[in-house]
Structure formats: structure tokens, C-alpha cells
Length: 491
Ligand code: TXE
Image (cartoon, helix red, strand yellow):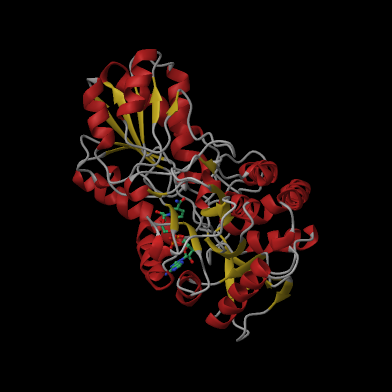
């Protein structure tokens, strides 16, 4: 059993009350690691360390270029450790090693991108409407950032917050998910080698109560960057009623994939498979409502069923595995209950809808394809966070767009067509933060990421993310040779 520690103020430590919780390997159902459950005292210590690092010591006096150099070194060390970090993430979350290792390597590019941006954050000189005044703005760090991440892509979702936050000169307290705490505590070992001043990056683990609640409501926290579920987001926003910290929310979705008759058929099938069965469907951008035009509907369903049944399910660390388990037993229970209820409402279970034979110890669930007559079916309405694809038929373009937009979410959308005018028309009409055309699930440090509606607010990645972690300061300078006039004699 591996025993991890918190990382606070540049040191590894236990929780103040010595409390630990156990993490389970979803592929085997076995307990494999323990992590400290941070208390309110630990949270307070971490936030105060971040606050000290923000205003005292080396960090606030570093030039932006020097901050960039530290981020660049972090990028190099993450790249060197990518294989190991990916393996730990797989053991803790059940996500495919092929994906976690590649993603950890790509995470280094996120830090590298923000290393480059650090000394390109600049303000403006304003053509002010008054004489003898020189007015300019600077972009200032917001302050202490609380970064809350879920279990489904911890290294990645940490980088999308920590990269821009540090580039802009903030300090951070990162809270890992209680479901899979190990990857970030392993990441702490990498962070420790970089040479950041103590307190610039703090990593803690614990539960929503007390850890998440006391972090997001802490009076010295200036900004909250959250990824997770909608209900938790509501709690987080309520918590920030205490400190009035601005919040960035990256939540879930019920993203549509629209497949038109004229699409490249194989490409569209690949998009639907990637959007639903990649990461066992545990992805915020899962394209879990697939709208297929009538002319190819039957052929499309037959092919996605064939592809779902060909997926090699098993040990996520093994090279030939294509789909691992779900992260928790609760996630599998949710797949089972939503699929059962959807079938009772009239959805056709074309394939899946059950556990795979011979994989009795982990939280495995077969890739599932549901034929849904309409969007009254439960599986078309709720975020399942599992390998469950709901397929719906449409005839006309505006019918597909209306159905696609008939959701409270708005994170991603896929459009498969070879009609260029339709690409622009439908991209404009779909209400979502990201639209992928003839591709799906692509991300980049350079491209903003975020949603409309219940999918969240604010943007991660790209230059946009810098704006989330900076605030404007306006500086007014009297350039007149005369001293400021008496306000009571002003004309
Ligand atoms: O996330 P939670 P969970 C969706 C998905 C999933 C559901 C629940 O549908 O089934 O959310 O997943 C911390 N104050 N997504 O339970 O609970 C918590 O400790 C502050 C979508 O894993 O939202 C964890 O670190 N923090 C999503 C983090 O919030 C609190 C990814 C996320 O936990 C808190 C994951 C509180 N009061 C799940 N309570 C996506 N967008 O990709 C909990 N937390």
C-alpha cells in the first residue's frame, strides 16, 4: 500500500489529525494507496502559505520571464515523468494507460505554452479624455487561486488551471479528487524538484466536506477554478458567497454529434466512437447524443454496434486494451440504472447494457448503444459519465439543430458533413462553447475550452485563460507641471 502525503508550503506532511483515506484500483476493486484527508486546519495552512508566497519572498519579485522559466522547467520534468504519472493515474482512476501516458506528455505542452505566455501579459495605454493625465492599465494576478479538480483527467485539468494561474503571477492551492488522489500527490513530487518558492504550489487531498468547502469559502482565497459536476458547482458558488471570489466553472455536458447523410461515413462513426467510448465515456465532452440523418441511420447504428462489440475491454494498463473500467462502483451503478430506466421508457438496447463476462472484480461496463425515439428518454437528458451512446434519427437540418439545442448544457458539439455552407450555418446555430467539424474530442493548450449554460462559465486554455487569472489595474498619472488643484476651486 503506497502512502501519499500532502504538499504544503514546500514540504510533504500529514493531515493535522493524522487522518487518511484509502484509494481503490477500479480495475481490480483492490485498495492500493492511502492519502491524507485534509482538515480545515490543513486548508488554512495551505491558503496562508499561498498568500505569503504571493506577497512575500521571491515569487512577487520575479520577472515574468523568470516565472516563465520555472514553468518551462516544470514542463520538462512533467514530460520526463509522463510515463510514470500516466501509470499512476491509470491505477487510481481506471483510465486507459495509453491515454493517461499520452495525456501526461501533452500536459507538459500546456505548461510550456503558459511558460511562453508569462511575459506577454500586458496592459494598455489609454487615450484619456482629459488634459495632463497619462493613464495606463496593467494585468495583475488575482491572488490566491483554489483549483478544484475531479478524477477523470486530473493531470490535464490541473494544468489548465495551474499553467495560466502561475504565468500570471498567482499562487495556487490544488485540491485533488477523493476518488483518485494519487496522480496529483505524485505530481507534487515533480513540482518539488522545480524550484518554485515554497507556497507557490500547494497540493491537498480530501473530501468535499470539510476540505473543498473550507478551501472555496476561505477568506484569503481570491479566485476559484473548478471542474466537476453541476451539483457540486452549485455548492462551490454558494461557498464563494463568503469570500466573493470569482469562479470559473468547467462542468459536464450532454453534447450532440450531428451526422448528415453526406458525411464521410467512417469518419462520422469514428467521431461517435471516440466521443462515447473514449475514456469509458467519462469525459465532460462526451458526445452522448448522436443525431443521424434518416438516409444513413440504419447503416450507422449497425456500424457503431459492430464497433462497440469489437472493443477490447480489460486491464487499463495492458497495451491491447481499448476500454478500461469506470472509476467507481457508483459510476457503474449510474450506467446500469439510467440504461434500465431508458429501456423501460422505450429505448432499444442495440448492444451492451450489461457488465462484460469474465471481468468480475473491477467496475467494468460494456459499451452500450441505445436507439432513442425522442429526447423524452432519460439517457438523452442526463450526463451519465459512462460508455452509453444514445442515437436519434432526424430528417431535416433545422430539426437536428433544434434537438441538439434542446438541453440545459452547452459544452461541445460535433458536426459531420461535407457541405461547407452547412458547416458554417450549423456551427453558428449550435449553442455550445466548442464545435468540432468532421473531428471530435480534439483539445490544445492554444484553444479556449469551456461551455454555455449548465456546462459552466469562463474559459480554460488559450490566451482567454490568462484573463480568468488576472485583474485590471488602472494607473492615473498627472503629467502637468502644476500641482493638483484644490478640488473646491475646480472650474
Ligand atoms: O464530481 P464532484 P464527482 C460529473 C459527472 C459525474 C458527476 C459527479 O456527471 O458523475 O459530475 O462526479 C470537490 N466544495 N463530472 O462526484 O463531486 C470534490 O472533492 C468544494 C463532470 O467526482 O463534482 C472533487 O475534488 N469542492 C466533470 C471535485 O469537487 C467540493 C468531471 C469534483 O467532485 C465540494 C467529473 C464542495 N462542497 C465529474 N464537494 C467534468 N466536467 O469533466 C465536492 N467537491
